[in-house]
Length: 264
Image 1 (cartoon, rainbow, N blue to C red):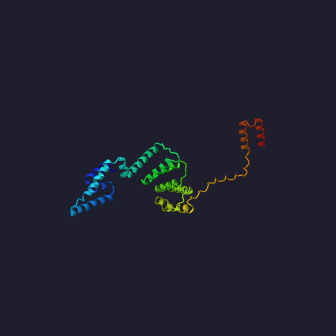
Image 2: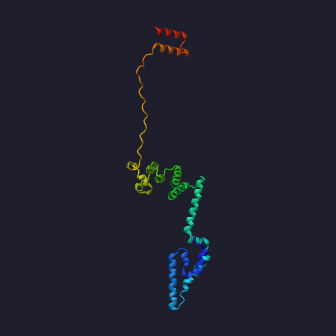
Image 3: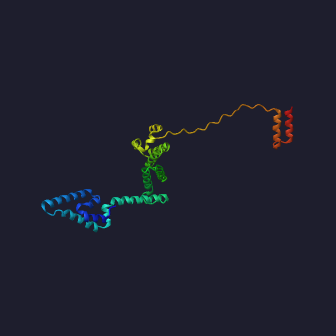
């Protein structure tokens, strides 16, 4: 951050050389001011005319302007980029804290939480935190909209952590939901691991669709063995009759009668 007071003092004491312009990042103006100093010095020495006063007056005028300028105007002119970057970082940090607390900002007509998750995922991906990027993009998917870029980003993340199946699944969903930049699939560095897999060739040739596994067909029950069983011998039949009698299914008289038939 450039300070108004520092710029003012540099312009007041060293303004003849244009030092304050270099401090403010105005390199072209600083070089021009510095050259003006040497030109004025040469004229002063050669012509014995006080041309050296010109760059000194310019520096003094700049010093007066700096001291009189409101701090807001100074920042808008010389610190605008840094202020915007600081505000962006502060908003990002606040949004990340809200994300951790599951307190999402609301805004009519737009879903800022989705935009935040996208930014969070990209920031984590660029930082090499691929697992964290996956978490952010998966949470974005939980918003209920199948954005193709979400699935493509997830495919890139899973490829970077060498999970080919998950990468292929989300790449298929990305294409199915409208992702049509197929050249990017072949060029994107993050998908290098996926492209090296033997399954990728058939997958790409099939229109970026995984071959569906065959439905598991239940085995047909074996045909019932209808071969007639050999008849029971009389002793086994009597034992079965005894069990029926004990269960109360036949009376004692019926048991005796059937027993006599078998013993004949």
